[in-house]
Amino acid sequence: MKQRQVHILHGVAASAGIAIGKAVVLDTRRIERYPKIRITASLMADEIKRFNDAVRASEKQIREAIRELEDHNVGKEHSFILETHLMMLTDPSLTGRVKELIATEHINAEWALKIALHEIERNFESIGDEYIKSRVADTTFVGERLLRNLIGKKTKKFHLLEDSVIVAHDLSPADTAMLNKEKVLGFATDVGGMTSHTSIIAHSLEMPAVVGLENASTLISPGDRVILDGISGVVIVNPSENQILEYEHRARSFLSLELKLKEKAKSPAVTRDGKYVKVKGNLEFKDEVRTVLDHGAEGIGLYRTEFLYLNRNHVPSEEDHYQAYKAVVEAVSPYNTVIRTLDLGGDKFYSSLGQLRNEMNPVMGLRAIRLCLKEVDIFKTQLRGILRASHYGNTSIMFPMISGMEELMKAKEILEETKEDLIREGIPFDENIPVGIMVEVPSAAAIADILATEVDFFSIGTNDLIQYALAIDRGNEYVNYLYEPLHPAVLRLIKFTVDAAHNTGIPVSMCGEMAGREIYTPILLGMGIDILSTNAFAISHVKEMARKVDLDQCNRIVDHIFHMKTAQEIYDFMEEEIVGKSPEIFEMH
Image (cartoon, rainbow, N blue to C red; front, side, top):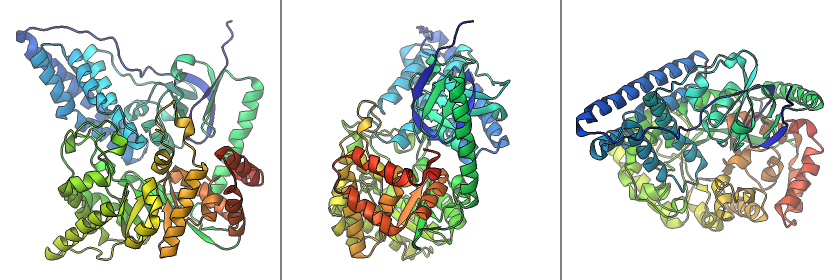
């Protein structure tokens, strides 16, 4: 018998846990071989009908996938993702463009579909925002489903015979819905990041997942024994018996720790010297709110609102905004809900706002608050929805990507105009609603002392702050190794921001990925961060770390690391100071 080859693959730890099972490799790669046929005018109507039939077949399959997700009690937010796929099937930028190409270029539907997909994807070539990038993949999922239906390559439902680790190039919510969840132990994909659909659904199912493995689906063969470590982001293919025994022990330790942390999830985080540390949750979809609260969140520190704008055929109405925010505010109160205004930009293609001008460097172009100040009517519509929702509970407004005082003052002026409109119309809202900003641009951190005089709170968005401060694209595989939260420059920007806020008497929260890593928690507390806001599944771990330290210890750590010269020095020190002394907390690391 041929000996199976051993591989150790490294990717992104997207959902914590350890799975040991046999690989089931799914064919989800894009179809590159398809017919290219010139057609006569007399055949155009038949070709458009054939495409319409593929659209109807795709719609039927997606609706079946939605029912499957609901039957398996996967959160409604993932059904929402599939609902956006349904909307895309009537989006002129895709299906309308295909029909136009068939009629004007006299080509078959498969060829026209591929051209339309390539046109859309070109609009995303320079996307730097990982959240939006993962949502853009929806276009590819829908396009590939249409293409499979056109060429007669059906998407089948997989019936797994034993506990399996699913390996694929990528997985859409529909792909996941077609799997027997009782047989699946975890997911491994070539592509994806922390906010990809695979990561989101793995979190909801509380299954381990490793994404961004690049070539797992080609290196791993069906039936290979696989260890999937969703804690460190490692996949071991055809491991030795000793490796299996070691990871079985790690899996038991991880599950034991998780059970202990879940028991204490809703208990407050109080340091050993009595300091209460508030830990909130980040939210993408309104239907996630119960999950976030059940995992111990004491409010919502970041409610992303971009989902309302993506893959729609119309600009969201005031009522769309109001209903989405009201549902969350009511569920979270008396805790606070911080609603961030629109954080999309000129690099994002979304049919509801039309095609904005292509930009050479969209990450630094017309996005977030800059877009809102240009499209004032769209901005005011969202502000009206937020203000109306504030009547029903504890709500705050947060402006993203503020880079200077001019932007902030203009945004506040528009907010005041919106308030005055509501007062004239007799519509109730919280007239004293707190207003804050995201500090995620180095210029904002540099003038934090000035900006602090005009707002009620700061929230530090480390994802963009690190990217901008270090001049790196974290989505670029060639330079993403430079994305380092412990870089001394990043830590100094954070410390200056916190000190400036406290000197002015306003609180500071952190809502980037850094807030959800417990190895950073002592540093953040030592620098004076008041509130930590993270994804639901990190809340209990951050709380537990806060309980293990005291503020004097955290202050000493900060004093010490601020004399260090490199991120690696700081990380090595933290591993010795924190991980070495509290290894039980870091079973998942």
